[in-house]
Length: 256
Image 1: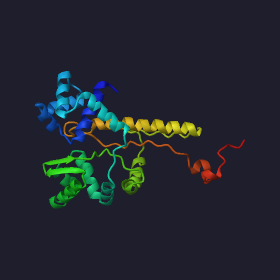
Image 2 (image 1 turned 90 degrees about the vertical axis):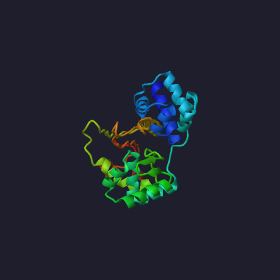
Image 3 (image 1 turned 30 degrees about the vertical axis):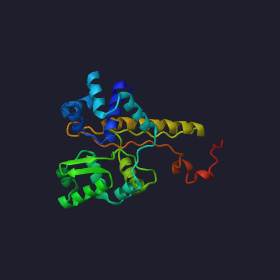
Image 4 (image 1 turned 180 degrees about the horizontal axis):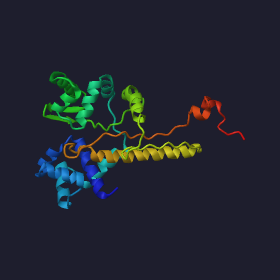
């Protein structure tokens, strides 16, 4: 990772922790919002500008790096049990939360969710009480907990949407340049499988870093599209190979 990307990542991490918008950072720096977006999307800044950014964030560059490293090495960000339960229980609440995270404004939410103002207002108030968004007015709705937050394995969101998500994910031919799927069945030693799993975990962390870099960009200036990122490894339980036998019933060795 280049130093410029590391700096941008650290700055954006600090902004998320402070719930700081581009506009607010620009006001602290005494520059335009457009300039701040350019700094943090294209990396067009010099040392003097970097010093002003750090000053506006109230931290040295070294402190920003240390804070980012602490976040990377610590526990992965997660929803609270109450937040997961609420999102899993109410599909409209779930949709509203993710649309707000994608930058949708009040009028657009009304049209997309096909509801009236009063029900939408109640959804936003509920999201605010859960600590997921900050709802100041219909013109000022901000995400507080990143919509990039992973679903807890086995948790309410995972149980509610896992089957639907996997079904929709695999209901695809994976033929376009934006899609990728490779199936690689292989016989390996257990220690090799463990190494491969760790490699996949590192890949997911690298993906998360790139996703975090994109998080917070203004979608009107730089449109984004949601993608599934799935990494997986598991022992084969495949009837085409085992002929209906359970893995425990097979010896694991071919017979000559």
